Length: 524
Image 1 (cartoon, rainbow, N blue to C red):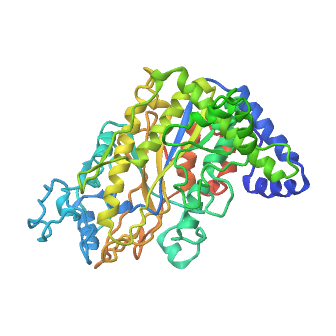
Image 2: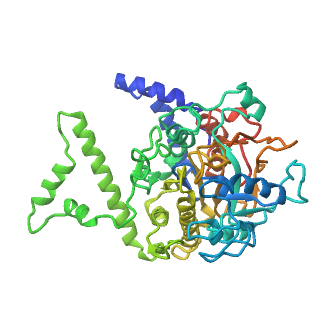
Image 3: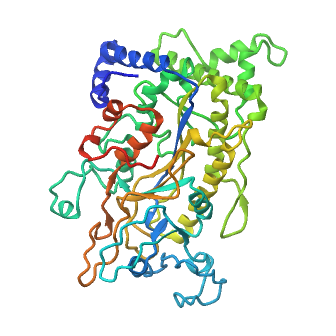
């Protein structure tokens, strides 16, 4: 399949200008041609991308850790300080009962302190990582996950999960010396939640009105026949600050939000039925109120069209689910709070259950390509990080394990090979701490899960970080800021290539991709 090379930044400008003139112009013709080509190539080889967004900026330094002696000593020295230290315990450390003294820190263990959680969980990547050039280099570099990420340790060990190290928004590769000298351009407004969410979800390291998930959806929506409304689906509702995420905003594809609970079929059925409460006029009356048409106001007509589209889409989903109840997915299990022991719903797992149900419905809806967005937060742990991040990571781990299990048997079919799930976040956090938390950072580490993923490995160079002392000079960090080695665009392009986006289309979606020596990080 070949399509025209479309630069989405130019398209946004041109599209906006043409809208003022009341014409879709050349862009409409180009995109229509791309859609027709995609439809012509449509097959039953279903694929889905699922973005798990961690709002607020997850602390990657307490998510994936280097545990060789030199790396660990520098990590522990930086984080075993302040009002409430956040340094995790070394591998193999037994949990210390609350109220007893830890042999590692000499402090009394408390419910919300790392002493009571036990040591970090070792993982052994298939590809050995280079030994960091430090004064007392270890014979081999070793790694571990946060103690609350047990389900992810299991997925990694089984080859179903990979880690991509040190990713962040970049315009071009940059070294520490270049960053200090300000000789290489960097994304605007680093360390700003709003701007870096835009950089991660937009994929351009610059302000944009389209997200890369939606941009990919623009190219593949033609493979979904008449049901293009199901191309880009958000299951996070209004969890994103300000409403739905930028990630799923395409130039033609609209983000469609689904509920994580039962769809209100009674309301939908009422306006589409022949009678309601014995009245034959009630359905049409309600329909005219909530989806008005024929008004002299374009705004009212547009509103009515949106409501009608949403109701029709929900009706299609309900009908598809009812046709084959055997393909209803496993119910997301309750989450046990590791601190209180109390059971509660896992909002992220519930969102992923809704996604799994849409994947189960895809064949009956004639849909071959879908992009999903789910989210959890807040990971903005300036303070009380020991209270906030562990619980959130526990929810992420349970949700990933649940989703993998749910996809393994949908109507007797294992769909894990056709679904790739990945994490994203505003930024990593600072390596040093501020009494009880961490401040905004830049680079971070991310998880990718799926049957097509080359799991059980860490992709990219894990950074050499620590407190500068003596002859040691941090090559990857300035102050507390980790400089990314790999760009969001490389990370996203690797996912897009698997999804079926061509090299030319990737170049159009990610304008800075040309600045990097490789567009594919090789994890899938």
